[in-house]
Length: 243
Image 1 (cartoon, helix red, strand yellow):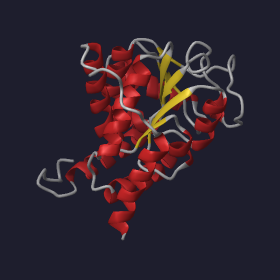
Image 2 (cartoon, helix red, strand yellow):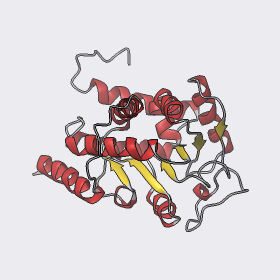
Image 3 (cartoon, rainbow, N blue to C red):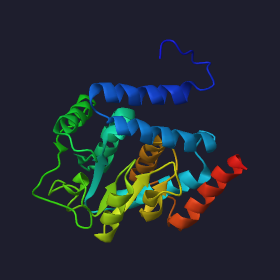
Image 4 (spheres, helix red, strand yellow):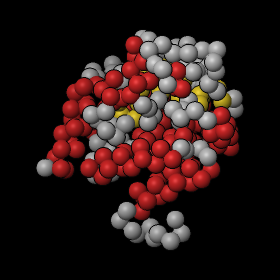
Protein backbone atom coordinates (compact mmCIF):
# COMPACT_ATOMS: atom_id res chain seq x y z
CA UNK A 1 0.00 0.00 0.00
CA UNK A 2 3.00 2.32 -0.27
CA UNK A 3 1.47 3.90 -3.38
CA UNK A 4 -1.81 4.82 -1.62
CA UNK A 5 -1.70 7.82 0.75
CA UNK A 6 -3.53 7.54 4.07
CA UNK A 7 -5.52 10.61 3.05
CA UNK A 8 -7.17 8.60 0.27
CA UNK A 9 -10.94 8.32 1.06
CA UNK A 10 -10.86 4.59 0.29
CA UNK A 11 -7.60 3.90 2.13
CA UNK A 12 -8.96 1.47 4.74
CA UNK A 13 -11.02 -0.47 2.22
CA UNK A 14 -8.03 -0.70 -0.11
CA UNK A 15 -5.78 -1.80 2.76
CA UNK A 16 -8.17 -4.62 3.62
CA UNK A 17 -8.43 -5.61 -0.03
CA UNK A 18 -4.65 -5.67 -0.24
CA UNK A 19 -4.50 -8.05 2.74
CA UNK A 20 -6.79 -10.49 0.93
CA UNK A 21 -4.65 -10.31 -2.22
CA UNK A 22 -1.55 -10.95 -0.10
CA UNK A 23 -3.35 -13.93 1.43
CA UNK A 24 -3.89 -15.43 -2.02
CA UNK A 25 -0.24 -14.91 -2.93
CA UNK A 26 0.86 -16.62 0.27
CA UNK A 27 -1.50 -19.55 -0.25
CA UNK A 28 -3.78 -18.74 2.68
CA UNK A 29 -6.83 -17.51 0.79
CA UNK A 30 -8.32 -19.22 -2.26
CA UNK A 31 -8.95 -17.27 -5.45
CA UNK A 32 -12.64 -17.86 -4.82
CA UNK A 33 -12.15 -15.94 -1.57
CA UNK A 34 -11.46 -12.81 -3.61
CA UNK A 35 -14.98 -12.99 -5.00
CA UNK A 36 -16.47 -13.54 -1.56
CA UNK A 37 -14.53 -10.57 -0.21
CA UNK A 38 -15.72 -8.33 -3.03
CA UNK A 39 -19.33 -9.21 -2.23
CA UNK A 40 -18.78 -8.33 1.43
CA UNK A 41 -17.00 -5.11 0.50
CA UNK A 42 -20.07 -4.01 -1.46
CA UNK A 43 -22.30 -4.49 1.59
CA UNK A 44 -19.79 -2.69 3.79
CA UNK A 45 -19.93 0.25 1.41
CA UNK A 46 -23.73 0.32 1.72
CA UNK A 47 -23.39 0.23 5.51
CA UNK A 48 -21.16 3.29 5.39
CA UNK A 49 -18.09 1.26 6.42
CA UNK A 50 -18.88 1.78 10.09
CA UNK A 51 -20.11 -0.27 13.02
CA UNK A 52 -23.82 0.25 13.67
CA UNK A 53 -25.87 -0.19 16.82
CA UNK A 54 -27.26 -3.54 15.67
CA UNK A 55 -23.71 -4.84 15.33
CA UNK A 56 -22.80 -3.58 18.81
CA UNK A 57 -25.84 -5.38 20.25
CA UNK A 58 -24.80 -8.59 18.50
CA UNK A 59 -21.20 -8.24 19.68
CA UNK A 60 -22.38 -7.85 23.28
CA UNK A 61 -24.60 -10.94 22.98
CA UNK A 62 -21.80 -12.89 21.29
CA UNK A 63 -19.31 -12.05 24.04
CA UNK A 64 -21.74 -13.32 26.68
CA UNK A 65 -22.57 -16.50 24.76
CA UNK A 66 -18.95 -17.39 24.07
CA UNK A 67 -17.79 -16.52 27.58
CA UNK A 68 -20.38 -18.86 29.12
CA UNK A 69 -19.95 -21.74 26.66
CA UNK A 70 -18.61 -25.02 28.00
CA UNK A 71 -16.41 -25.75 25.00
CA UNK A 72 -16.16 -22.81 22.60
CA UNK A 73 -14.12 -23.21 19.41
CA UNK A 74 -12.95 -20.63 16.85
CA UNK A 75 -13.18 -21.80 13.25
CA UNK A 76 -10.73 -20.20 10.80
CA UNK A 77 -10.88 -20.08 7.01
CA UNK A 78 -8.54 -18.44 4.52
CA UNK A 79 -10.16 -15.02 4.31
CA UNK A 80 -10.35 -14.42 8.04
CA UNK A 81 -6.79 -15.69 8.53
CA UNK A 82 -5.56 -13.17 5.96
CA UNK A 83 -7.54 -10.32 7.50
CA UNK A 84 -7.36 -10.86 11.25
CA UNK A 85 -4.90 -13.56 12.33
CA UNK A 86 -3.57 -11.60 15.31
CA UNK A 87 -7.06 -10.85 16.65
CA UNK A 88 -8.07 -14.49 16.24
CA UNK A 89 -5.14 -15.53 18.42
CA UNK A 90 -6.08 -12.92 21.03
CA UNK A 91 -9.67 -14.18 20.99
CA UNK A 92 -8.45 -17.75 21.44
CA UNK A 93 -6.44 -16.67 24.49
CA UNK A 94 -9.29 -14.64 25.97
CA UNK A 95 -11.76 -17.52 25.67
CA UNK A 96 -9.23 -20.29 26.27
CA UNK A 97 -10.75 -21.73 23.11
CA UNK A 98 -8.90 -23.66 20.42
CA UNK A 99 -8.41 -22.37 16.90
CA UNK A 100 -9.44 -24.86 14.24
CA UNK A 101 -8.69 -24.61 10.51
CA UNK A 102 -11.65 -25.36 8.27
CA UNK A 103 -11.92 -24.43 4.58
CA UNK A 104 -14.43 -25.03 1.79
CA UNK A 105 -12.08 -25.73 -1.13
CA UNK A 106 -10.04 -28.78 -0.10
CA UNK A 107 -6.30 -28.09 0.02
CA UNK A 108 -3.85 -29.59 2.49
CA UNK A 109 -1.21 -27.00 1.60
CA UNK A 110 -3.64 -24.14 2.27
CA UNK A 111 -4.70 -25.66 5.59
CA UNK A 112 -1.05 -25.83 6.63
CA UNK A 113 -0.45 -22.25 5.44
CA UNK A 114 -3.35 -21.02 7.58
CA UNK A 115 -1.99 -22.87 10.60
CA UNK A 116 1.42 -21.36 9.94
CA UNK A 117 0.17 -17.77 9.84
CA UNK A 118 -1.80 -18.28 13.07
CA UNK A 119 1.31 -19.64 14.79
CA UNK A 120 3.37 -16.72 13.49
CA UNK A 121 0.97 -14.49 15.40
CA UNK A 122 1.44 -16.42 18.63
CA UNK A 123 -0.97 -19.34 18.44
CA UNK A 124 0.08 -22.58 20.12
CA UNK A 125 -1.63 -25.75 18.96
CA UNK A 126 -3.97 -25.23 16.01
CA UNK A 127 -6.50 -27.98 15.38
CA UNK A 128 -6.76 -29.38 11.86
CA UNK A 129 -9.56 -31.18 9.99
CA UNK A 130 -9.64 -34.93 10.43
CA UNK A 131 -11.50 -37.75 8.72
CA UNK A 132 -11.98 -39.18 12.22
CA UNK A 133 -14.86 -36.77 12.80
CA UNK A 134 -17.50 -35.51 10.38
CA UNK A 135 -20.48 -33.21 10.79
CA UNK A 136 -23.96 -34.37 9.91
CA UNK A 137 -26.22 -32.71 7.33
CA UNK A 138 -23.42 -31.52 5.01
CA UNK A 139 -21.56 -33.10 2.08
CA UNK A 140 -18.79 -30.57 1.34
CA UNK A 141 -15.19 -30.76 2.53
CA UNK A 142 -16.14 -28.62 5.52
CA UNK A 143 -17.84 -31.59 7.17
CA UNK A 144 -14.42 -32.91 8.27
CA UNK A 145 -13.51 -31.45 11.67
CA UNK A 146 -11.26 -32.18 14.61
CA UNK A 147 -12.87 -34.60 17.10
CA UNK A 148 -11.81 -32.46 20.09
CA UNK A 149 -12.65 -29.18 18.39
CA UNK A 150 -15.73 -28.28 16.36
CA UNK A 151 -17.10 -31.80 16.63
CA UNK A 152 -17.62 -31.56 20.40
CA UNK A 153 -18.03 -27.79 20.66
CA UNK A 154 -21.21 -26.35 22.12
CA UNK A 155 -20.55 -22.86 20.72
CA UNK A 156 -18.53 -21.98 17.64
CA UNK A 157 -17.29 -18.59 16.49
CA UNK A 158 -17.22 -18.83 12.70
CA UNK A 159 -16.55 -15.49 10.99
CA UNK A 160 -17.13 -15.45 7.23
CA UNK A 161 -18.95 -18.78 7.28
CA UNK A 162 -20.77 -20.51 4.41
CA UNK A 163 -24.50 -21.11 4.69
CA UNK A 164 -24.49 -24.89 4.28
CA UNK A 165 -22.21 -25.53 7.22
CA UNK A 166 -23.85 -22.92 9.42
CA UNK A 167 -27.18 -24.67 8.88
CA UNK A 168 -25.58 -28.06 9.57
CA UNK A 169 -24.01 -26.87 12.81
CA UNK A 170 -27.32 -25.45 14.00
CA UNK A 171 -29.17 -28.66 13.11
CA UNK A 172 -26.65 -30.50 15.26
CA UNK A 173 -27.67 -28.32 18.21
CA UNK A 174 -24.58 -26.12 18.30
CA UNK A 175 -24.68 -22.39 18.93
CA UNK A 176 -23.06 -20.39 16.13
CA UNK A 177 -21.73 -16.84 16.25
CA UNK A 178 -20.81 -15.45 12.86
CA UNK A 179 -19.67 -12.20 11.25
CA UNK A 180 -21.40 -11.50 7.94
CA UNK A 181 -21.79 -8.20 6.12
CA UNK A 182 -24.84 -9.48 4.23
CA UNK A 183 -27.84 -9.55 6.61
CA UNK A 184 -29.85 -11.51 4.03
CA UNK A 185 -27.47 -14.45 3.59
CA UNK A 186 -28.30 -18.00 4.68
CA UNK A 187 -25.46 -17.83 7.18
CA UNK A 188 -26.74 -14.61 8.73
CA UNK A 189 -30.26 -15.97 9.05
CA UNK A 190 -29.22 -19.41 10.31
CA UNK A 191 -26.71 -18.39 12.98
CA UNK A 192 -27.58 -17.98 16.64
CA UNK A 193 -25.96 -14.54 16.65
CA UNK A 194 -24.93 -12.63 13.53
CA UNK A 195 -22.62 -9.63 13.76
CA UNK A 196 -23.34 -7.57 10.64
CA UNK A 197 -20.05 -5.75 10.41
CA UNK A 198 -16.60 -5.99 8.87
CA UNK A 199 -14.59 -8.64 10.69
CA UNK A 200 -11.62 -6.27 11.07
CA UNK A 201 -13.83 -3.89 13.08
CA UNK A 202 -15.89 -6.52 14.88
CA UNK A 203 -13.08 -8.62 16.34
CA UNK A 204 -11.42 -5.86 18.41
CA UNK A 205 -14.84 -4.88 19.77
CA UNK A 206 -15.62 -8.50 20.66
CA UNK A 207 -12.31 -8.71 22.49
CA UNK A 208 -13.14 -5.53 24.41
CA UNK A 209 -16.50 -7.04 25.38
CA UNK A 210 -14.85 -10.19 26.69
CA UNK A 211 -12.35 -8.18 28.72
CA UNK A 212 -15.17 -6.20 30.34
CA UNK A 213 -17.01 -9.40 31.21
CA UNK A 214 -13.84 -10.88 32.69
CA UNK A 215 -13.38 -7.74 34.79
CA UNK A 216 -16.92 -8.06 36.12
CA UNK A 217 -18.29 -5.15 34.17
CA UNK A 218 -21.30 -6.97 32.75
CA UNK A 219 -23.81 -4.52 34.20
CA UNK A 220 -26.19 -7.13 35.60
CA UNK A 221 -28.66 -9.06 33.47
CA UNK A 222 -27.82 -9.06 29.75
CA UNK A 223 -30.30 -7.30 27.47
CA UNK A 224 -32.64 -9.50 25.45
CA UNK A 225 -31.26 -10.34 22.02
CA UNK A 226 -33.24 -11.45 18.98
CA UNK A 227 -31.11 -12.22 15.94
CA UNK A 228 -33.86 -11.70 13.36
CA UNK A 229 -34.72 -8.31 14.84
CA UNK A 230 -31.11 -7.18 14.57
CA UNK A 231 -30.87 -8.54 11.02
CA UNK A 232 -33.98 -6.57 10.06
CA UNK A 233 -32.33 -3.41 11.40
CA UNK A 234 -29.21 -4.18 9.37
CA UNK A 235 -31.25 -4.76 6.23
CA UNK A 236 -33.01 -1.41 6.71
CA UNK A 237 -29.60 0.27 6.97
CA UNK A 238 -28.50 -1.34 3.69
CA UNK A 239 -31.73 -0.44 1.91
CA UNK A 240 -31.70 3.14 3.15
CA UNK A 241 -28.39 3.65 1.36
CA UNK A 242 -29.73 2.06 -1.83
CA UNK A 243 -32.98 4.06 -1.77
